Amino acid sequence: MPEKFRGKYLDQESMTNDLIKIFTIFHKPYFTYQNEIFTAIQAGRKISNMRLDMIGDDTGDNISGKNENYNELTAIYWVWKNIRADYIGFCHYRRYFNFNLNDNLEEVFPPTPPEYFDKNYGIMNIEEIFSNRMIKSLLAKHDIILPKKIHLGGRTIEDHYKECHIAEDWDLMIEVVSKKYPEYKSYIQEIFKNNDKLYAFNMFVMKYDIFVSYTEWLFSILFEIEKKISNSQKRVFGFMAERLLNLFIHKNVQDKTRIKELFTLNMFVYLYPFVDVLHPVNFPSTYYTADS
View 1 (spheres, one colour):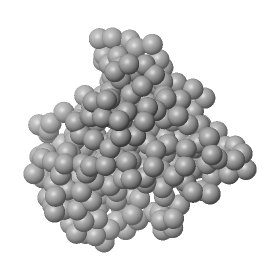
View 2 (tube, rainbow, N blue to C red):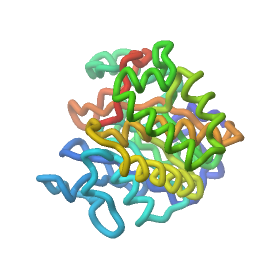
View 3 (cartoon, rainbow, N blue to C red):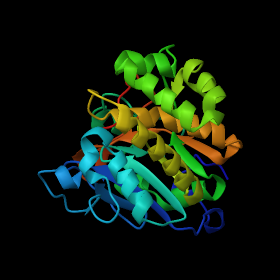
């Protein structure tokens, strides 16, 4: 059955019965949607001056106090250490996966006024955007959901990072990965030095065993870098993780048909229950930061 169709067209047999948990990461008050799949979580609660009405990343095994440099990764770490489900995923308070629109629609940056969306695509209900049926259908066919790759304007992932962030941090990251995981060296060349497309935003949904493998690998690298890095920028490990996800996926997921790429929704709420969403334009090549 075509994956493009809205959830109401999907039949029960096409959907997984596995437990799916997708965590929406917040650091400030914003539009919040929660249901049996989506759970809101406050990142960096331990060092925040506000307590949002949702779960936080500061209980159990956590690195909530490191949020200034780890950003959304403190929430991802908390879920890794404290939550079990068949599928684990993450999105952001203002950015969600497009689970329900046709594949030829994508996020506009900056967002389009709701009148444009209404005129060109019809009004969409909040419940349709967060279609449990569509999510379950997609995960019956795929092990991983990722955002569509963004184009870096002809720059490689390495060149793009060095241009937008601190070049020495990149070199340290490559050094640590190469020493800890020498089997990744050839993939570093292929993904970082010869490729100009990027899975961004630290957004994904993964089958649990893949999620555990990824987070074990990711945090072992970042914690080692943390011991050696000095005078870096805020959110540095969030920026690094965006790039490292691409390396991990390329090396470890051989069957690319098990990956589903989706466009994203930038959720600017104007009038409940309608939201400003997408229209067919490309991300600007200069859009590079992890979500904040």
